[in-house]
Image 1 (cartoon, rainbow, N blue to C red):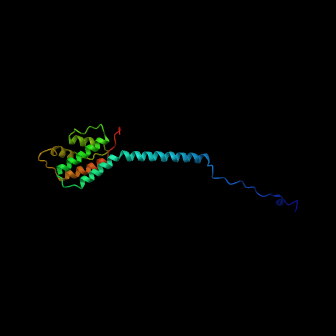
Image 2: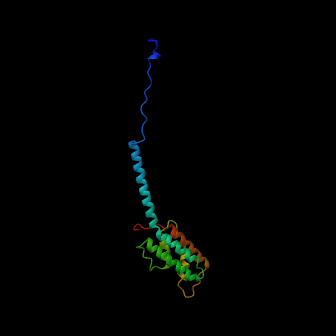
Image 3: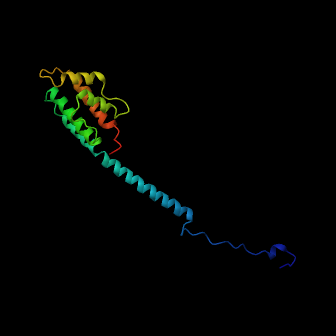
Length: 163
């Protein structure tokens, strides 16, 4: 070995130990905590939303049952749809007081519960004029409009602040 040779005087490189996986850095603990909190609140929100919309699912099931029983008269079917609307509105808006309102007024108030009106003026007038007469002469299009409007109202209405 030559004492003048500088390469001979070099020593091996000492490497540090590898960084272990456990315990994680504080940032990972914080991220884990945030993910757990977000998951908890997401599940809580989804469960509450599912429970709060139970009446909608029941109303849709009732509407499907009514659609499968077309042997009733047009007037009876309209009465059944309006009764379903009143029950659903009573559940969604306990203080709405639709039990004693006339049909056009009730449908008008229900229109205000949606972003876009679902029951047009002609339907409200026809139902208000013809529905409770002894010789009711309802056109079949009236039932179709009412059933479609009922389905859209159940799906689109906003819940009241007290619910």
